[in-house]
Length: 300
Image (cartoon, rainbow, N blue to C red; front, side, top):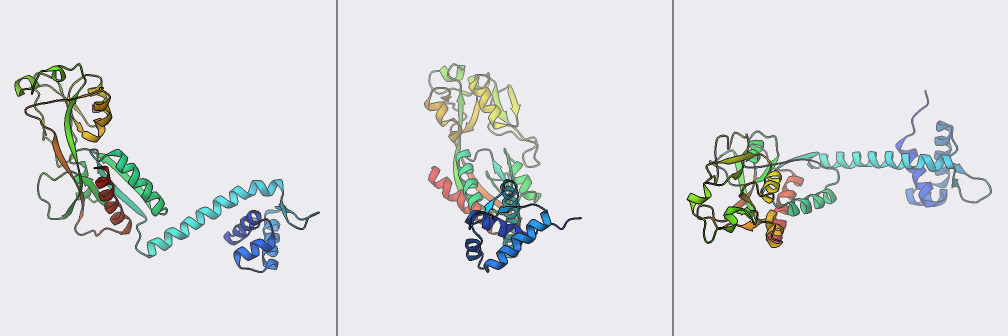
């Protein structure tokens, strides 16, 4: 059985290939040129392949085989360097993974912006993200299936949780332009609202099981996905409340109409950071919460 190349051999191979000479690689790695040459010779002997052509020129040139092997070597070096960085981060208290539960009302541009910055700032930390409505965020945090959550206010006090407001959004009632509620003149009374299908988000979490929020119609369609609710409202299949950020462009371009409903005014929706009091947040989780707060303030 042939011995496997070592990380050191692969790093030297990559350094020689990228710098173009044994002497330049020696300077880059702070080693003698003879050590670099010896390492490459040993690697070629182990692989039983010639990686560099040393004839007819002062500088080594990659053979076709060497070019093919270079990408594999780079990939292996990168993986092992990432492992080293992760180990060092864990030793210093950095989480190996962060599990986050996010309410659907959080503006998706904010979420995308925060996670992009997180990837750049914590390249070794894995992320597990769950997005849902109503009590899902609270359930996941209470069951410690998420390190922290960003969601709406609780239905009841929980001494075992720490809460802190990070921002605010709003829920607003909308419908397609040709919907009866949209063409009603003046504020729509409750008696008229009740006669038209309301699309309602529901979930199966312990926090909101069997509870209704802002439901006024006699006939409802129940959904668990806010994107589907958005699509159905656009199609004129009912009316309902949606996060204001989600329908901003639809309202501006006339695809949806803001409803003036007597029983359902536009409603502020605070967004809170939620985590267990007995599970202090690590550096990456703390950074995420702070960044969510900053981006929500910018988003307005």
